[in-house]
Length: 438
Image 1: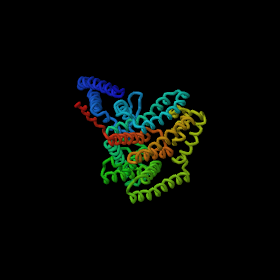
Image 2: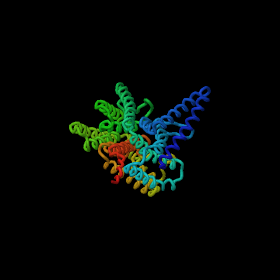
Image 3: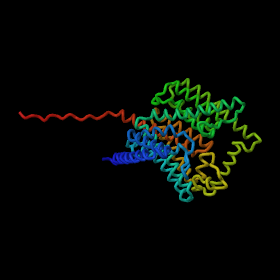
Image 4: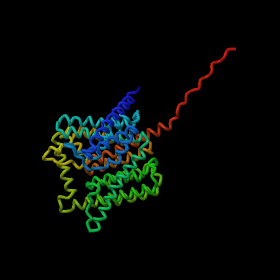
């Protein structure tokens, strides 16, 4: 019996025993602690779904990965997105189809290179947030890749991506409605959504940038009708406009260019989109220029320039390995996250970490570019869009960073499944009768 099969059966057995124990506990606690009983029942339901379909939980994670609301349990304070990734990672790791494809293994090794280069700063700067973030960064990349692979390889790619789009659509609708309400009373300031939970304008902007690229790409395997992706695209774009997230606008423009130039069959539609990108970029440049020309030294443009300078100062304290991941949790002087991906890696992990980061990101883009366009274009566009977004604001943020790698894993799993289905199945050879003597 193969090792992976043994691990899968062992996990199934443990899950079944755990579910039985929890079920007994639910019955015991239902009369005295109904809330706890309800939570336990939900765990039993999820465990049962996992046993029936190991990829169910990884697919469900696509609906929750956009949720930035925080869950605090004792000293642990995580986003719902982090919890969804952490919980769905284990069935994806132990029960997803094997072997991993060559492309997935390449991406995992590229992330391992980055994790190795940042291990130096973990050793050099021994504080808790540093160690926790090292594991967290690995989950956002390799964990997300494996979760996406599990859903795609099991044939749930269409369901998983649809869940991601529907969740993003709910957030977009809330942002647009709030924007209309603000505009109706003459308030044209950026929208910070409050429903279904409070979000920063850049968080919602980046998430909707991803959903807009997915809807515009409209991969054939998604199975949505044209009107559905069109509505999703313009709803997402309107939400970005309401939030006035400049990095989301630039990232979206890059993603649309990639999809349009590489493999979009509708040339007229692509040309119209490309013509519409130039005015958007002009608006972004005008907004930045106006802020720099104003007398308000506390606006976001001037604040970023100050943070850039202070981030370089923080990096210079330890140029080779940095001052530690999430050092702003413990540093009273530089108590902010650098609003630029390159500067953040430099300040946190030094030159060594930056080399690993560039190897990981550039290598991942190369791997995805070489993938079959049917699957690779969307993954490449989202990852490049995220890389651009992260140079204009925070990069290592749970939701925004995990989504591109989650979709990349999904595309890799689906590509591997399609390749496996296209291989001719071997048939047992018929026995040749022995010659008879005569």
